[in-house]
Image (tube, rainbow over all chains, first blue to last red; front, side):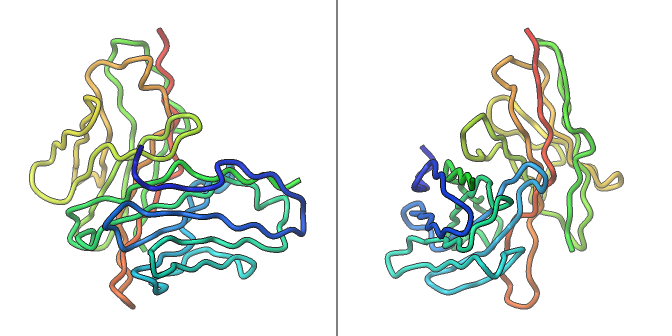
Length: 116
Length: 117
């Protein structure tokens, strides 16, 4: 157990629907990162939050949004789902000393989204 | 922008033989390099990192990696492969945003390691 908790583990939904993925970071970690792993595009960085504020944005679609709450858990919202959104969505967290290189990103087990 | 490349989609090796999973990087400045492993239906697990210092880095499960600045490579190695090492391996580089000083990991495409008994 990495200490990063993601729910749900699996999710099957239909095109056009909206889903929310949840992530609880490791205790003490302030940063949360979201990554998408698909077969054809590998691991893509989506977005990062640090202590409740958006810090960096990657290849995140406009249909996707995220937030980090005061208790530091984060949610990734995916709307108007398309078949191509089917993927594994990973959350990772890091401690403040990540910036010095002293620590690493710790990943959760992922949420597998299947859009039918 | 920083990037890493994993030239092999799959590496096959017999149990007991040495294994190498290749990674090359393209960065400006000093690289912070990482290896992660992903077992089926699991998240990514950290194996090892290179920040500075010795070019040979030792990590979890008997893995090590050699940083080679002249060849811009960071190959993952293990002297004697186990069937249980079969998994997907990712090389990654830490990228800093100069706009806001945030950091993120940029991953390679992954290499599937298959260790046959």
